[in-house]
Image (cartoon, rainbow, N blue to C red; front, side, top):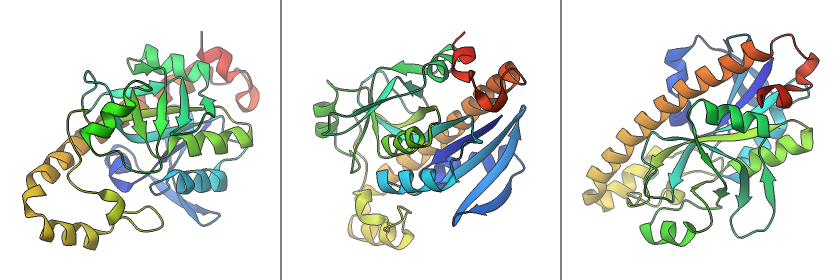
Amino acid sequence: MRVLVTFAVEAEFAPWRKLRNLSSREINGITVHEAMIGRAAVDFVVSGMGLENAQSATTAVLTKSHDFCIAAGFAGALRPQLKPGTVMVSEAVQLLGKSETLTCGRGLTLNAWEQKAVRARLLLTSDHIVRTVEEKAQLAPFAEFVDMESFGVLSAAQKCGRPAVAIRVISDSDDKELPMDLDMTVNEKGKIRLGGVLLYLGRHPMQLPALFRLGRDSRIAALSLANFLEAYIKKLSLFTHGWFPDGEGLEEVAAR
């Protein structure tokens, strides 16, 4: 079994550097980190923030040899019961402001739910960071949580003919505002610019405690997600190993 797992930023991927001995290779200009989990060869990709970066990286790396793809990483809660560290799995993903909806693989979704991920009806993918309490409240009637990449990953997977699922972890709750406009501190590749962060803090020093809180919650969230994905992928790899060639029928088996 071969699995592709995508993240947007290094902070989401960081725990894997301690959990696993990783090897690296280049595919179409994208750095791919690889590890064995159970009987699965897992490719990890850090795409950069935003839908276009996620879609581009997934398209560059995903092949027919991958049995399925996981759009992983942080997400913002839109409901009060969802706290930092809560692992979520969504039945579908919709681009904010658009009607098109992509459905996650049913078997992959059910398996994550059985392993105690919180099952959601809809995940929204936004073209900007949803940072204010007011905007979160406006989106709450439509979905349980929000990110910036999953629609791009699922879209690329659909074009490749591979099943995919969005498994995200809550990094900020619905009643907390993000301490800065992070859209202003990332480059065109969706990577955090340290200089931009320091410049912002120099102009808004009162935001430093909130930034520390976000950093703490993000570390907790990243570790929670890594531990979940480790168990999730291992179970699927052992459960389906040798049953079907090239993942054929995986969705049906995973749903049982």
